[in-house]
Amino acid sequence: MRGLIYMIMGLMFVSCTGRFKDLNTDNTGITDEDMQVDLNHLGIPLNVIQQGIYFNYDYGKGKNWPYQLMQNLSADMFSGYMHDYKPLNGGSHNSDYNLQDGWNGTLWENTYAYIMPQIKRLEDSTRLKYPAVYAVTEILKVEVMHRVSDYYGPVIYTSFGNKKMIYLPDSQQDVYYRFLDDLKTAVEILENYVNLAGYTPEFSRFDLLLDGKVESWIRFANSLRLRLAIRMAMADPDRARQEFVDAFADPRREAFFEPCPDDVLLQDRDGRDSVRSPLKGQYRGIRQGTMFAHTLYSALSKIYVNVQTKPILMTAAEVWFLRAEAALRGWTTEDPGICYEQGIRCSFSQWQVPGVETYLQSDCRAADFEDAFTPGNNIKARCLVTPRWDDAASAEMKLERIITQKWLAVFPEGCEAWAEQRRTGYPRLFPVRYNNSRNGCVDTEKMIRRLSYPSSIFDSDNGQYEMLVDALGGPDHAGTPLWWDTGRNF
Image 1 (cartoon, rainbow, N blue to C red):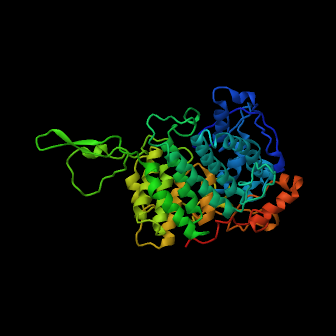
Image 2 (tube, one colour):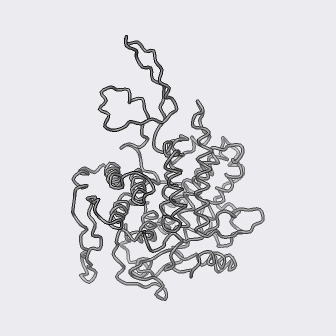
Image 3 (cartoon, one colour):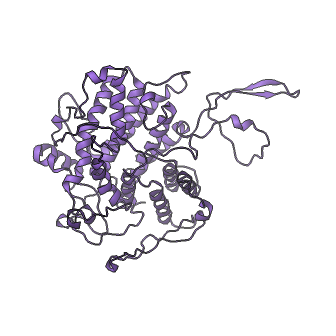
């Protein structure tokens, strides 16, 4: 698996169909007896859900083919990150938009057959008794399902697993609003636990992604809110701005900083500790330019992210680029250039690459592509921005710089890179040399916009399929743009 984290869990593979009425049946092979031991009713579903984000299951066969089909041969390739060197299917497949349904339906089918049933099971069993576990489940649910929506468009989200077995699709607009609401609710639940002395949440021992701390899940949830808000910047600018500001204001402190651990005793004129400054539990920072010479500020809020922080699903660099774009749009009072440069610094630090300050001042441009064997494939570079920030540049040029560097920083997470490239048009990728899309549905210059729904839905539940297409608002092919893909940036 090419990814930020490696997740392995052996489960028996069972194929699934597009019939949502069948998706209440758990296909993971987990029995009720398995759930009765040592909080397994929490741990087993949490493990399945966390590992299901990238779905790097090998089913005991030493193969990671589901991940390869779900991500490597779609998002990773469409984002411009990688390409399979084998001439699969005679050399004509997803790469030239001759889309393979057997590949492209894998994310949809496996998510609904394996992951969503576990999410529903955990939601029902934790909502009242284990609210912190419930909150983490909701965060994971959004992380899992926004990726599915960013592939296909409308999804089954709010009605999944309902007792009436009526599975109505959510349009992408509606499901994005629900994603943001669910993240907000999860943060509110977790914030109730932040200041409980000695509290160890039940999910801690089963946390595969973070460090088991409530604060870390608040940080992740708010960072995810920033990502989704930016994604809908042009589809619903007012809602997007408000969501970003809400996640960036009060909750942002929990997302990036620790509260002050203790009060501080200040000395009187005689050098005795006599005046207590009440700081414990508060969020306090340092104003720049105060020329202080003491060490008292060491007691103030510490940043969670540092050079040792391991990248998991989202990175500090991505958050800085989200902040840069928000500032460029006037949503915050931050300086977009400063946020942009901080994003680059964080990415260099993450990968432990030297020379970041030189890079920040570089006017080097992207190189032309020269094929090693077939000169006919050569093409001039289309990305013309340089790393150096230019305050005098147009807003469009600034955005191109931000997204191009963001594309580099989120590597190798092709799902996010592909989504952002479709939303903004950046970085300026090379178009396909040959376009074999069905009936020419994909414009070579506009490139692929989504994946079609799996044929299994059409074959086994045509009514469900028609509802999904109706919610999509366009034909079910790879050239139809998603809701947040408006074709403009300002």
